[in-house]
Length: 114
Image 1 (cartoon, rainbow, N blue to C red):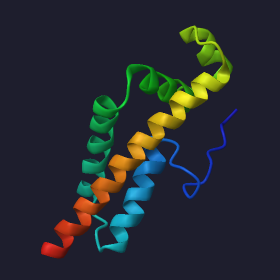
Image 2: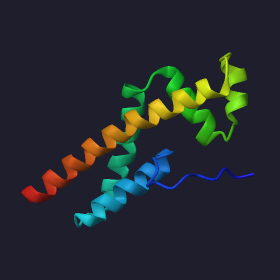
Image 3: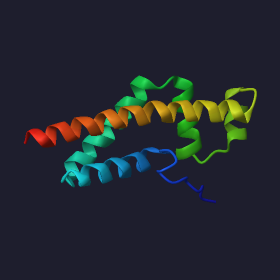
């Protein structure tokens, strides 16, 4: 059973949505280059490794990439509740969103210089 992903407008929920969001923002600035998308993938991967705690990365990976429920993740990680897992996911997403915003500013500034 596929998980329904919330719209980007409410929050960025996974790497693919983050990439779609970045592509949309880049297209607004005239950039639709496949190379830019690949750079974004690397940027997000690096940001996840640097910015997120191990627990945030694990919760996000298990939830979005491995389609596990909050309850399953809580049990696997020995966490007290599903809300704790949800908290780690939310905090991790907020950190990545902030970095994505910085990346977009970088793209805008570089496109203005050209």
